[in-house]
Length: 178
Image (cartoon, rainbow, N blue to C red; front, side, top):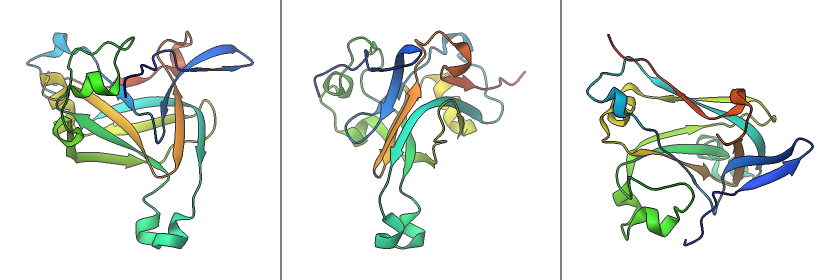
């Protein structure tokens, strides 16, 4: 809980790749600077775009829990951040510094959850809908960012913004009402 993973990376045939990883021990936290959009209204939903680097998953959840419950596993969960350190810096944030001594459920909005499958092929796109109310809270600064964590035995890695290729960086697409 006191270790920073800003240097999380892998090496492949293209060299060192910076990645964001959600697994049982690591969660992805994302934040944007919306100062220029303060007091503006979101028009419709937003769309979070993540490009897959790798996915490992498994488990016989349906066999153990049945179809209706078992099908919920093997995904990632996107959650709003309401609290914690709003000015965290990626080069030194840790779980403990981010939480500032608070309970997890005092920092996140446990009601606003979106579960989604992850495209497993390297370079494939994942598009996650961010509802208009959540998008508006992001613009207003009420929501401090998003946490991505696994749901079940999943290790999902996505290209980080530090990678030079623009078409693989995480992006948040949204429209402003005129």
